[in-house]
Image (cartoon, rainbow, N blue to C red; front, side):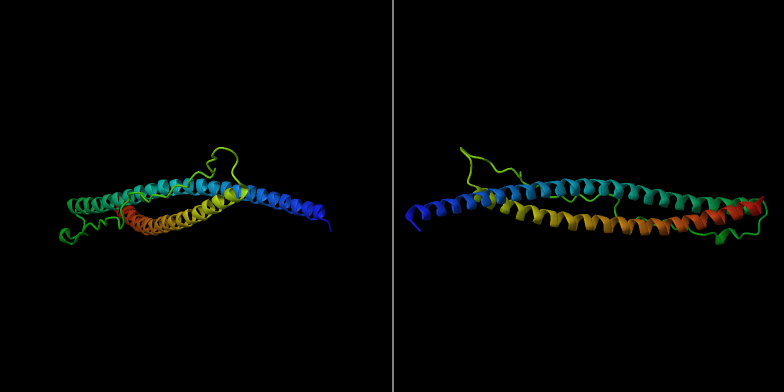
Length: 190
């Protein structure tokens, strides 16, 4: 093969390498966009979980208030029965069993780190595709670390919500039982 043939072959290889580097730059840029979309979705999910946790906390407080009201209503019904000749010993009335919430109803204030801009800063002229690929890969690595941390935080928020739901269920059952007992007591009085 002649010198010109080697030169043409070398030029073809450089063109192929350049095309490959350009495709890699485009591919890593797409990956960065996907990471950014995942981050936005995760941030929105975190916001919704905070709102849900706040609502669950409010429900828990309301159930505590209902439980307290049931205790007061039971004492008042007992007093009414005593006044009207019921056979209830005044000194054996139930003590109020108001339980405080196990956890604070404040939403978690966990800060989720922000992603850096996925668009590389372009200096004068067009950067080399190899440089863009390296920058994009660094940002992808950073973005994946942030998404991993976000996933752990979202998992913690979901666990907190599940614990609140369990407590709410138990409190609801307790309140339901008390309300049924009060209804039976009222029906016996009538």
